[in-house]
Image (tube, rainbow, N blue to C red):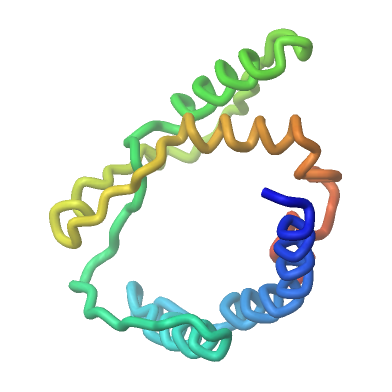
Length: 160
């Protein structure tokens, strides 16, 4: 890709950032799930905003119910171990990474199952958690996530 095109894409993304934040702020402020599962107000705001930005909008009825959406059904510890393995491979100079756990009385299971969304809606994600972690490692290596632990742009509530 030539530098002129890269520069134009970059400028367009930066210029659109303010509109993106305004859009996200409105979504966050829009009441939802009252009754539980009712996201009509957020869906309508999203469609209206996307249309005003020049995107085509299609509306489809979604069957009642709540859906988990994921490529792999993994526990939080499984994800932590996968992230540890990949980060250690991608950044060997960092050495071994410890996974810290803290005792809790919370007995909820965060192991999700996404079979229902495939069965009812026919939706299947195309990317794995491993791909996402490797993409993030690449972004860190390329300097695309500066100040990512403290920058306001990485915190929705702080920014909104």
